[in-house]
Amino acid sequence: MRAKLTPRGKDRREQLLRTSAQLFAERGYHPTSVADIVSALGVGKGVFYWYFSSKEELLAELLKAGNHELRKRQQQSIGTEGDSLRRIELGIEATLAWFADHRDHFSIIQFAATDETFAPVLARNEQIGLADTARHLKEAMADGRIADSDPDMLARAIHGVIGRLTRDYIIDRGASVAEVAELAKTFCLRGLTG
Amino acid sequence: MRAKLTPRGKDRREQLLRTSAQLFAERGYHPTSVADIVSALGVGKGVFYWYFSSKEELLAELLKAGNHELRKRQQQSIGTEGDSLRRIELGIEATLAWFADHRDHFSIIQFAATDETFAPVLARNEQIGLADTARHLKEAMADGRIADSDPDMLARAIHGVIGRLTRDYIIDRGASVAEVAELAKTFCLRGLTG
DNA sequence: CGAGGACTTGACCGGGCGGTCAAGGAATGT
DNA sequence: ACATTCCTTGACCGCCCGGTCAAGTCCTCG
View (tube, each protein chain N blue to C red):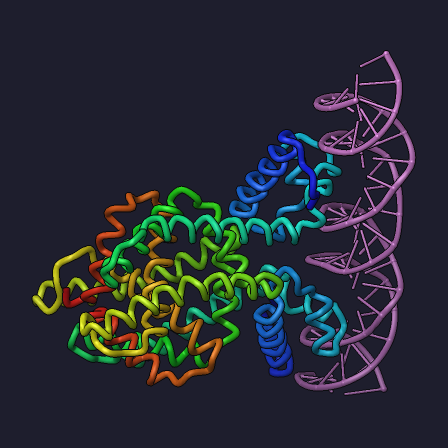
């Protein structure tokens, strides 16, 4: 990664990130070669290594940037909402909406979770979102809004629901965020018994 | 894959499957070379290709066998239970218990889901378990035991919870099945509000 | 216009990959 | 003892991968 980038340079860098994300999502990280990436852009191999020191660094950058964006969106969506359960609902909606706009990123995350090189960073990223959810849960418990239970495990259960519905409906079927969010919220709050 | 295998041959084949599963789970499928596998067993490379026609075929075999075992365990656990919701609970317990005994398999499945070669088979495998869960849900709805909703989406939500808790607690922390199953069942049935 | 930094090219490299195979050893039936 | 089949060895092959770099070209600014 270079320190100084002209506007043109920044564009190229973005192009590389976008194209790589797309190819990684379609074919997977390992099966996608640097040659594939540059050839998809119609440029020479040197271009890649002008902007990134390795394929690995590019993926790390992709994960970092994506996580940053998602978190920003969640925070904007939650804003100053005071109700703890409502904050969880808003977080769910924001997450679904963001992945609907960044489908490639979901596949990339899923791969990264299985790779010993990237799993640690990914785990740290997830930890933060998990902690947020758990915080809201603790508050809701303190207020007697929900049953007392392990907030950390509940947070993971919620993220499990969201992750799965995101993959099956938002990514695979392009379903509407509202429709999925509705069921997700109901299920998380009231379970099957409704 | 050979048609005729002596007892000794069957042992070797099992050894190869076990060792590969372990290495795939630890380092990932692509980063694990056939040379790694045979060297972990202290045998020549030809042994691998005597029992499997390719690395790809071995992974496919691993997925197939694992899915078969898991399904068998679920069916045995559910047995002749008549209550639809109880069947779901028993399925949850059986799934957690099986993955507790086959941790490698979880990582392998997670990778396979991200690879375009294996995702299709995996999706078919999952489809079956999903259909089972959805069937129980429909029955429970018909009996007025749970709220009317999209059974397919609910089934995926449940599987999302189980998958996530399996990974975070059973695989990563070696937590007890009973403890995790308890929260999973409560969360799925009654949600946060308990 | 010229200098100099930003960017691009693509041939090239060492190495590791999945997969092959001729040859040889062990078990088994006859 | 011999033949036959099952299993094992490990050197070898062709390919392609990630990464390098000398030689440009393009842009900007003085």
